[in-house]
Length: 228
Image 1 (cartoon, rainbow, N blue to C red):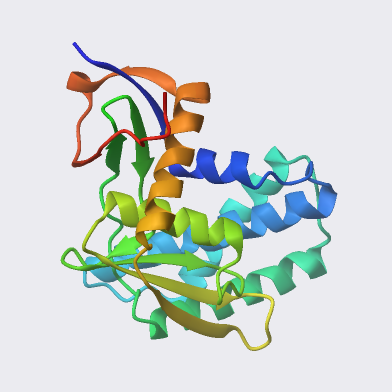
Image 2 (image 1 turned 180 degrees about the vertical axis):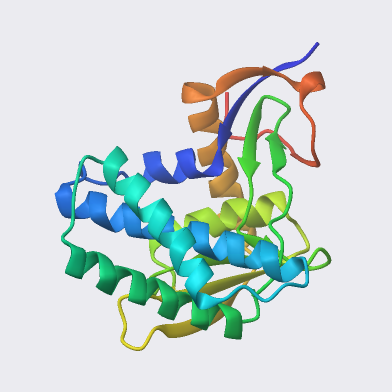
């Protein structure tokens, strides 16, 4: 049996670009983000089934997720702010339904292995099942800031040969602004630096896993030459 150290791509991003401890407004923003993600996920599921979910039904989904997330974060917003928030979620849903990612499925999680010692789980938000994957943000991230750029490079390593698309449905704009960008493949130097980062963090904080027991597609990369 082969034991590796495994960690998700988001953990590499989080440790490379740590954020300050969340404040109360951050908890509200995270709850809104969960409501948007959950409503988009349910809307996409319904579209893939050939159904046409109404804005009212999706607002109810978003409202339930928002209330649950606020309760988990032990924060509260007044009814007027909640209503305004759900209107914004509906605006994001309208933008989503007009975008190229509407109804696309999420790919199965893939793992890329570095030297058969470290494994990184990666799962973009959407893909077309053939040659493109899409990462979505509910804020403007074009051009991508360093943390988003790293996240996409990790996905590119897990999905080699796929064209990477960044889709932003900026909930902070009025009306919601849609911006997209095709992210070029990493250069050899960028790929090597990202593999080195993944290898180092994986050996430091990755959880031991038995490789033979892991399912899903895998991509193999050699151990970085600097690793000793």
